Length: 297
Image (cartoon, one colour):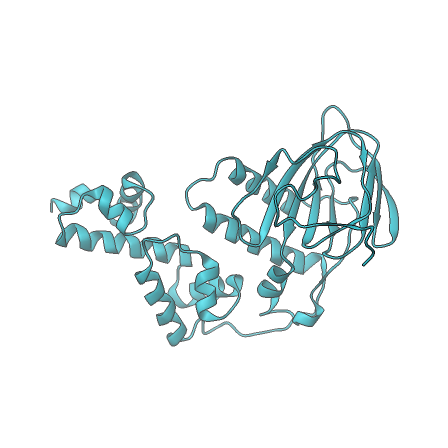
């Protein structure tokens, strides 16, 4: 690779420093395998560069100006005039752009291994190749997904890590379906998880209810991708992994209410709820009474 080509690593803070006039106005932190940045830039032109991760640039319409310009991608040049389009820049592909007016856009970067991990159960891994795309087409699915991730950066809510895991898996599946050179491989999932794998996952959940359990951790126990695991688990148990974890937390709370003098706040923390209010809401929804009413029976 030529020494003149800048390399952007979205695993690091301020990855576009020195390439864009202004730093990101919003950046995600602490997410596994996926990174989001929001940029507001004046008229600019970048030097040729490459990304270490797959990058998706999503245009955001600006009431003050609808930016137009040129993009050079994988040896091709194209004029771009769609402010709400998306460009796909696969890892290692040379790229530069030049905009005629101020622009607002987001960059969603994901680890190449994520596509391999999610697609391994349906697609020949050797044929998973993300195809470069200019910003001339809109994709409402990705647009809405990115806006949801942006909201999580601004104000992460209950179950944020589970939501981000689910969204990145949905993104990977969407990319595999529509933006990759792939060869589907059929597999049977009628029987769900094996009894051995199911028991291993359940034992891990029970031993770690107090932790922030993530889908990727449970899938690793079963040695399959998160998306495939979620599908097989629901076929085996009749409910999603998230619903099962919630159910087990409530069941453990019931046991502690019956056999301990712990306060509701202590019980909530011990079984993995955010706080007493979270315990009460979930408990009431699943059991039909509040924890206090249940203890008084």
